[in-house]
Length: 436
Image 1 (tube, helix red, strand yellow):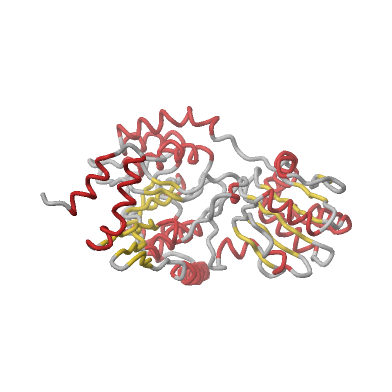
Image 2 (image 1 turned 120 degrees about the horizontal axis):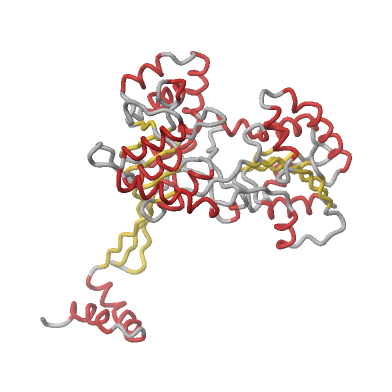
């Protein structure tokens, strides 16, 4: 089922690895021109345009774009007790991790009376997108809202597509989690129109624009984010989800197979990649995948993903080579199933999140590990990070110099200004020490 890419006996160079490693990806640029008119119309026509697009794409026009508070309360009150308990545990763990991520201010003294203090200010208003589509994502509400709250964001809005089967409301479990988190502003709008409406707002409809938008979505959502970036901040562009697993002969092939399958059930374009120096393990894992994928409720979806060009088994000569391949691949999720997984984890430079050992599988991170599951995809873990409390905070420098401290550094500032041909910069310094 999983195709094999045999890199044994080859020199593993970065450019070559980027060409040969399995990856499907999406071409966001190809749909930007299609999404641009939608964003333009929502910018100028606001909620009415967003509702028109919702009716066109989702087949329903909600009576209220902003979900009434009574509907949030109703959804929470009707939540299955077992699901509620699972959500509460997830919230508790994610809150603890993200609260401890909050950075502290610090001051650097450069000379007597000369200090630079770095403080951290939260993003004031944040828009959180929660997709609909192939699955229900209450976990995405938690993973986006909790770090924003930990950062100190003053207001949050969640946008999620209206569902025809729920009378034009977002999925009730999404609404319930919003209520449990204290997020009382929820918009029944999805797709690119949701991104545009959060970016530009609509004063007449009392929908205030946001300062930053985060959250996963399909290629049209991603294209809309690209179009409004600069008007608002956005998180990383999300491609199809992916898992890579480094495994040796000590790995349990059943665990590895299930973890590959679990990622594949997300989407036909999801990527499941095994990296190993053990041909026998590769054979056993492939057999287990073949035998077990059909038992999932989403067998057809998983089969497409596992058999696609974005998935496969990469055979290498050694564990060192496996690490090199993993670093070149820069997976969204990287699992390590080796004799000494912690030691291997220390050698990983590029991954969205690293799951160490047999008992830290990716599904744990999806819901209740405490870590965030909004992670960089498509190799972008080489230069970007997953969602965290830091995402919703901005470092700001406070520069404080007294007269003596400025006088001491003044000749250097003046010399620099003259070298750059900006004499007024120097005069602004001299003026403080001359008679006016």
